[in-house]
Length: 393
Image (cartoon, rainbow, N blue to C red; front, side, top):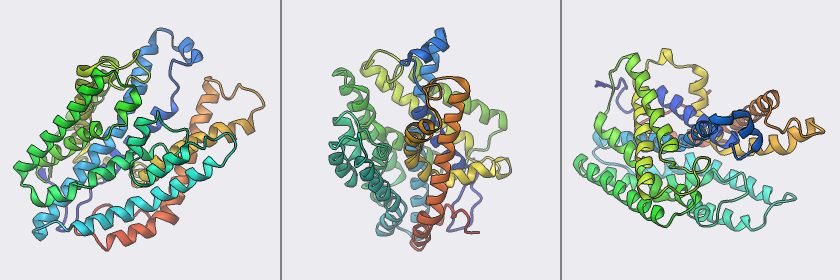
C-alpha cells in the first residue's frame, strides 16, 4: 500500500469519478439492451444468445458497484473525520446527505407524478410514488411487481438512505475490529434473506429489490476501506488489468453460471445456494474493480469520464426518462413505420446515441443549474472536503 496523497481535511480521488461513470454506463446498458426474449434478437445471435443475455444481466451489477463505492467512500470520509476531529458529526453528515440527495430526488419524483398524468399511464403507480417519497421505494417495488414509471431507478436511492440510517453511528462508536464484526453481521443477514428467497423461489424483482440483499455490497465497501487503512494499492498496470478482468469475470459467472439475476438468463429462481454464491461473486467483483482503479494516475484518466462521473447522480436518475422519450417521442416522430424501432444495426445505434446523449444533456443541465447551488451549501458542512463541484474552478 501507499498512503493517499491528500492534504489534511481533504479527500478526493478522481478515479472514483471514473468508477461512478462506469457504474452508470453499465446500468444504462442493462436497461437499454434487449434480451433474447425478443425473437429478432434471438434470431440474430443464434447460439450466442445465452452468453449475450448473461452479459446483459452482468451489466446490472453496475448498481452493486454504486453501492460498494458509496460504502467505501462514506467509511473512508467518516473514519478520516473521526481521526482528525476525534468524533463524527452525525448532524452534519445528515445535512450533507440531504443537500446532495433530496433536491434532485424529489424533483424526479415530481416528474414521475407528471408522467402519471400522461395518457396511457397507470394511476395505481401514484401510490408507489408516495412510498418512494418516504424512501421505501425498494420495498414497494419488491412487493408490487415493479412500476411502469421512469422514476423506477430511485428504488436504489431509497436503499442508500436506509444505509445512512446507521452508517454514521457505527463509524462514530465502533472500533475497527467492531466494524469488521458489523460487516460480517450484514453479510449473514443478506445471506439469510437470499437463502429464504431461494427456498420459496421468489421472483427476480423480489430478490433484486430487497434492501437486505443489497446491503452485502455495502459490507464489501466497508471491508475494503478497513483493509486499505486510508491508503491505495500500489500495483502495476498489468495487475490492474488482471483485476479488472477478474472482477468482470466474477460478474459474468454469477450471471451465466449461477443465474443470480435470472432476468434474461435461466428459467426462474435458481435456488438458495446459487443466489448466495452469485451475490458473493457480485460483491467480490465490485471490490476487485475498485482495487483496480484506486491509485491510478490522474494523467491516465480521461477528463470527460471524470466530469461524467461527477454528474453521475443525474445520469442515473434521468436515464430511464431519456430512454422512454427516445422510444415514445423521438423515434416515433422520425419514423412512419416500425423499421427504426426494430433491432437492426443502424436504427439500434441511432437509438442508443440519442438515449445516451439525451441522458447526458439532462444530467449536465440539472447539475449546472439545479444541483450545484445545493452542493455549494453542502460544502459549508463538510469536515473532510471531497468531490469538487464541476465548473466551479
